[in-house]
Structure formats: structure tokens, C-alpha cells
Length: 212
Picture 1: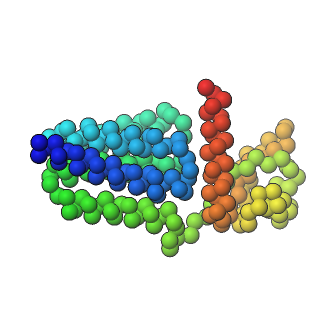
Picture 2: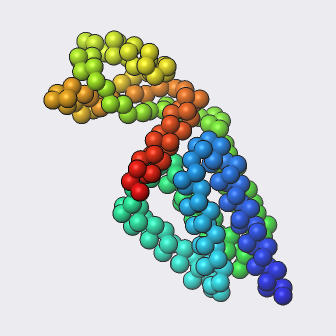
Picture 3: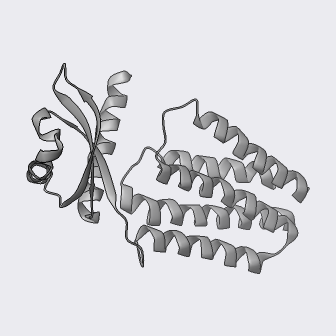
């Protein structure tokens, strides 16, 4: 019975941590439900697998083996943004750490480590003390404005269309047959960045629905 209660406390502790990460830190800034299921499912299943392994050495080895499997799957699935990939790494690492700490009975260190992870993610998501330059790729049709001498006119046209204060523009692939160019804009506007991220997520969701 003591073992079952210890197991139950460990499950609730691990799930509480991942729920805070996903629901209170990740989701409010992305509003992307596509990865919520993946994060919660990965974390819970990995914790259950590792908690049934009696040896700490074996559980840690299996945990890093899962990292290797996920890295292979990463190249065989749709591209995952760096931010979501980082969260997936954290979500995968937490049950490895928590299950190992449960077996070695170091609750104080375990709680401190989890709280420190939450604090780091919380600070980074709110950009406290950091300055991030946002960027976005755009398919642009006014091909005459991509000339170096028309750079200021290009930036002005993009600012009028997007409503963003653009700092610089990088010209990518140019298609003269269709008179289009791939342009990457750089700007500082966290509020609009969140809005554009929501629009991208909605577009990706619509595309997924169309492929079904």
C-alpha cells in the first residue's frame, strides 16, 4: 500500500508540473492546441514506463533512448517549430527526472529542480530581460520593389500592409515567371507576433483539415 501511495503521489506531482508548463506557460502565448495533446500524452506515458523500472540506471538509459527515438521521428514527420521542439524536450525530460528522483527518494531536490524549470520557462516566455527580434516569411508580388534602390519603398509598402514597424528585409527566392519573391521581414512587436502566430496556426489547421 505504501508503494502504491508513493506511486500515486509521484504521478500527481509529475502531472501537476507538466500541466503548469502546458496550460499556464506554453498555451497562453501560443494558443496552439495541436501540441497540447502531444505534450501531455508524451509526458504521462513516459513517466508510467519509467516508474515501473526498478533500476535508476535502467530508467535513465531508457529515457535517453527515447530521446534518440524522438530525434529520429523528428526527421520523418512534419517540421516542428524550434519553440515547440524545445518544449517537447522539456516535457520528455521531466518524467525521466521525476521518476529517477522518486526511486532515489530525493524529494526536496526534485521539487526544487521542477520549480526552477517552471521559473526559467516562465521568465523566457515573458521576455524579462531579453529582447527578441521577430521574423516572418512573406510571398511578395511587387517584383519591381525588390531592387536595392527601392528598398525604402519596399519597407514602406510592407509596413502599410502588415501594420508592423519593419527593421530590415531579406530577399529570398525570386520567381520572374510569376513575378513573385520570397521575403523575410524582421520587426519588434510581440503583440503582433502573437497575433500572426495565431493566424499561422489557424492556417496550418485548415490545411490539415483539407488533407483529411
